[in-house]
Image 1 (tube, rainbow, N blue to C red):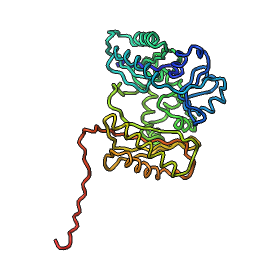
Image 2 (cartoon, rainbow, N blue to C red):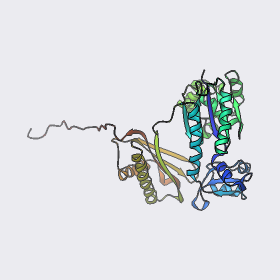
Image 3 (tube, rainbow, N blue to C red):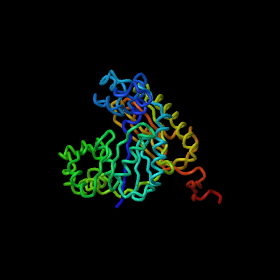
Image 4 (cartoon, rainbow, N blue to C red):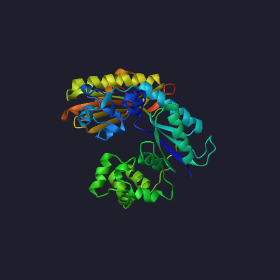
Length: 361
């Protein structure tokens, strides 16, 4: 049986700021964009969370909830430096390290360089070393698959360590509120609540067919995870799966001219970044967040690979036309490329032949 550890740094950006500015320790800290530029919260300290502040909240709202908080613009260079120290530590233990984001990773320690059989002891070692190397704390979850390890790392924060064994998993999942099931989003949770499904025990009563009918492939995933089934392997970091850029507009707008300018600008930036990393993309995605925070995306597989930012922008504008943007003011726009291929890979284009006989032939 596999031994999986999920490491999640505690309030990462805010903790780095409190570490580097001792006068902020024990005080509410919000890391995010300026409310004058319609910024949002990247993360916040636990002291700020006590006032209801959370990630992705508009900074203006966060400061109304916690006016005594210190607002700090993100400094990703310092966050990345701390993240690299933890990544080096993880790779010294096992090659099977899967970064999820700048502040969390999965590790498969079934076999490891520490030659330890206990994943719990390895997690304790990692927590100690993270603190010694970065002066930051992390929470750890240990189980036999990725889903349960992730749920476990979230269970006791900050600096917590939770183990879910195969024997304990059914009881643990039965009592777990639906909102704490990693992979079940807010929209799905609300839909389940309409059927009075609020805990794992109630979710487990639904047949696979019912969940599939309600949620499609995601329903099959829900059916498995509530039973502690997750066969996904820990996948070491490789080529990026997608490259994207997004921006919050200075003010909500339904002006298509302004929207199109932003889409073209984002497309040029995405193309530059994609080419810089040595890739081209087959699938284009446009993301739109309206003023009421509703989010929609539209994607298409391009008929041929595009390597020009202007052409990508033209296609992004055409794709956005399918999103019915005129109905509501737009708050945020994003452009992304996925289904990436190396720039050195052979490229094939569809050829079209006219078989109509020509006059005079």
